[in-house]
Length: 267
Image (cartoon, rainbow, N blue to C red):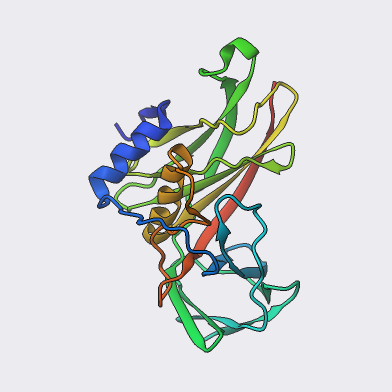
């Protein structure tokens, strides 16, 4: 059973089943209140400047231009006693000096703005290697000779793993959100179809996938947003308010994750 390959053709359905079996159903209580703080904070295992962005949300019907939050004090510390200050670059964008996150370390983000200090902690998961990418005819768009991308990797046994995949086609990121956990694939070889509705993938296109190994709280955040992309009523706020790991509660997340990329030319 450990080497048996599992196909995930009905991605949305399977992820929904997984979430319902492992995660309490989330009541989003979406509203139409704009001007809330949004923190998008990431620390990765890639050696380089890490990035945290602070902004304000806007009504869902507005353009995706979020007013930056300037003048904040932002830093990240780890359980090894290291502190990494973040310096504001473009308005609302905060960058660290170069460092690489380490799997197993706990990282704590602190951001102070307008007299309030926001904190969040995350343990960076171990890297699960991305084996390869393949392509095949799109089962839902086969009459147009279009393609879909499949991600292949070996899930390690006995460890709860959560994954996020970011698909770009010809250097343009696809809007669809792809997350998966290993509730039904622990210790097995996984073939995960990135079934998307945003972009038509043609022979000759170049597709790149970033694979992130994320913690449970960040998985819940992205899974909730994925639910919204399938059923997004009008009148809500963008970005919306999925469960956050930031205290006091605001919009956004703090993610410490491993990252790796593979690229394929579609035929």
